[in-house]
Amino acid sequence: MSLSFSVSVTGTLKGYDQLLNLVLDEAVEFLRDQDDPLKTTDQTRRLQFFVCRGTAVMVVSPTDEIDNPFIQPDGA
Image (tube, rainbow, N blue to C red):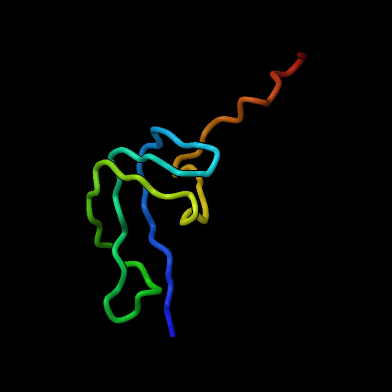
């Protein structure tokens, strides 16, 4: 039996390709609970420069809310 679980990493996206391979700078990994690897803890580990293979990527989302560049100003 094999157990797989996700790893949560945040950072500044510096590059990507069509296979969704990601390059992150100033990356931080959120560590898992040793007793329950399906739960994250408040502990983190700095990874600095991080390359993630696209086959391992499940979700990519911004951590900060950004303005919608497609909203038209009133009267336009």
